[in-house]
Image: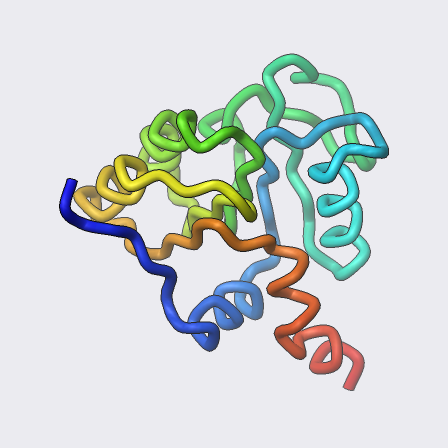
Length: 149
């Protein structure tokens, strides 16, 4: 593929975070030492509703929220789908994503896949963030200060 994915400007990414209320976390672990758990917990503390997605733990609870097997199973609107799965699995998540009404496809730091980006764009889903940590982006966005004022 000749296309190479590039993230939108910082202001656009901050706007995604500003508008979001609900974040589905794909690959959220129930292990407190796992990065996905720590980031999910931090986002929840920052006021976002977290929806855990982990097929091995479906039906259980993580961070006080019901775990779903797949984003397609979530019975409410998702603003951001934050993904903690290896890059080679991003096209599968993208295929599921386009079957939902979720707004933003967000692959965590270190995760990037051109095929996934192409699937999303071909289906009119251009709100894509890859290879960025959602917690770091939130921390440096100024949104916490906005919420406090």
